[in-house]
Image 1 (cartoon, rainbow, N blue to C red):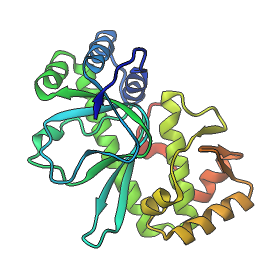
Image 2: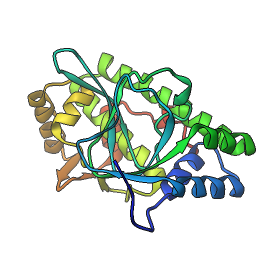
Image 3: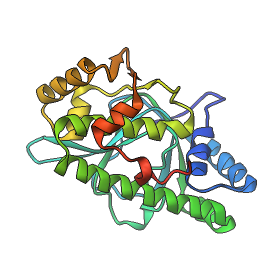
Length: 246
């Protein structure tokens, strides 16, 4: 991982995502913006920012790029347990734990910011709106994990994949990466299979069914949804678990 050596990297997705959960004061947004710009880093695709068993000593905040949280079994099988998108915080209070119980790997080149414990606790202590937004972000992440458990445990393959696509759209919407019909989608079929608990073959068949029904187009790392309402109906999707202000 190396320091980011360029100006103009957007920190706005972080503020926009937190604002979708709890309105930040102007002072909180400015303080967070300054903190994020102090220690910016970049990483190429295919690298772990943190690995299971590491001691967590700082908070990492994603400014651009896509990552995934994952667990690996002893025989090498991988389960993706969540996608980490621009604006996401990699566990606001993770430094309270003795070690990490999962890994976070990059799916694309990533720009992120690091905040150490002392600075982070100072930010939280000086502005209640920021503290509440960070707790809401943590609770939203927990809610997403519950929904993923339901997705794998109870939804059939078609519902499962459609639900994942709907969730990503709703998570990209607050940070301005959903155009109303299309959004970036740099996720491979292997990644999607590992996230939905399907084989790559089964995942491919399911995507083909969604395409055949005229619901989605996946091309050139872009996702186009022709009828979002119909896709949500297919997925049995209700976005309330994300807890975004609407």
